[in-house]
Amino acid sequence: MEEAGYRLVPFQQGADVYVINTCSVTDHADKKCRKVVRQAKKFRPDARVAIVGCYAQLKPKEIAEIDGVDLVLGAAEKFNLPQHLNNLTDTTETSVIAGPIDVVKDFLPAYSFQDRTRTFLKVQDGCDYQCAFCTIPLARGKSRSGTIEQVRRQAEDAAANGVKEIVLTGVNIGDFGRREGVLPEDRETFLQLIQTLDELKGIERFRISSIEPNLLSDDIIRFVAGSKRFVPHFHIPLQSGSDKILKAMGRRYKKDLYAHRIQLIRDLMPDAGIGVDVITGFPGESHADFLETYHFLQELDVSYLHVFTYSERPDTRAIKMADPVPGAVRQERTTQLISLSEKKKRAFYQKYSGTMRKVLLEAETDGIWMTGFTDNYIRVRTAFDPLLVNELAWCGLDELLPDTQFECQTPVPVSDESLILNNVSKSV
Ligand code: SF4
Image (cartoon, rainbow, N blue to C red; front, side, top):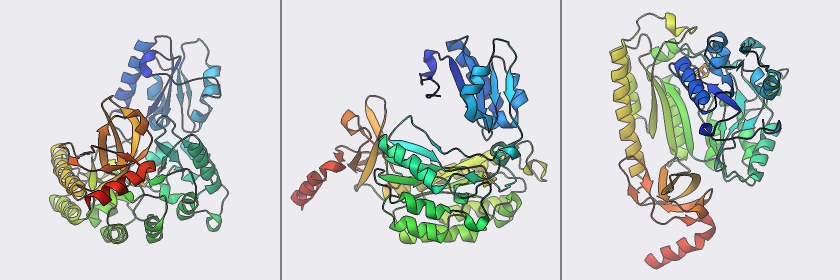
């Protein structure tokens, strides 16, 4: 868009074009989309409104009926947004350009560029798995990725723009390497990708976003444990701690494999932050199945949970399954797991109380505080100092606040490390 002469402005300022990215995982995507279109039109009544994203791919006609929408673009067409905007005429007809998802084979590596501190680099898109509850493969298509060389160039470009931390993202990143026309034996792998990126100077930290437990191989865990730049932080979807439910969901592992991965991470990286996705109330989840999940998670040495309440999605296998769990029971199970998550997170944080860790301080601020994360994903706040934006600093994890983040009194930029050594020798 920038190459076509556009520039980013704040939402409320009133833009010539609003591009609304929709999500099919969120509940009530249509209502949310309608609301944002209305807000955009309030700030700029004659703005052009384009809708992209998963919901635009899944339900283009429904979106086209929303008042004020000019353009609906599917998964392939969104990359040609500037041209499609140029083609718009003054007619009131909404233009819908969304082809079938199975023809989408292109992959365009890209990274977000709003906050230069932490940047999300897309290394893979789409998914060939067919989990019973999930609409993502319908919205994002077949698994595909760029080459290691393309990703490396993107990361270098980000580094040249001052980025310090890159989060590798994708729909199913462990499946990195699939490309149209490349035979299975010639595919590059996720392990090769991270081995290459680990050598890249200029980026301080790489973080792996959510990765399927069956694809997070022991080799990947071992490599991260000995790597220079990959931080000890993992986010691994579990979804259920019952093998019966995992099978019904169409997941590709059993709970034993999951427990083994966590154990290996703990053995090699005792400080690692480990996050877990879990779904409550999947069809057929009995009270005993839920308890099995609860106890499995209780015993598991992980740092926090992301809890999702199962909800029916059109065109999925799960929607036709027997024994749906009543809504109130689903909610109750979610509440129990959220409470377990809070306990785990606090216990994880408490272990580090009074220690020092490197924190990458971010640009976002309310004018009083600035925040950042340690390598193992502990959130820390300190008084805002413009000189510390986008800087790695040694932070004392001095006080654990009620909203589970630490406050640091005196951060010391990593470039001034000698100050810390001096302080340490004095106190000795
Ligand atoms: S692996 Fe993830 S994206 Fe793929 S189908 Fe399963 S839940 Fe959906």
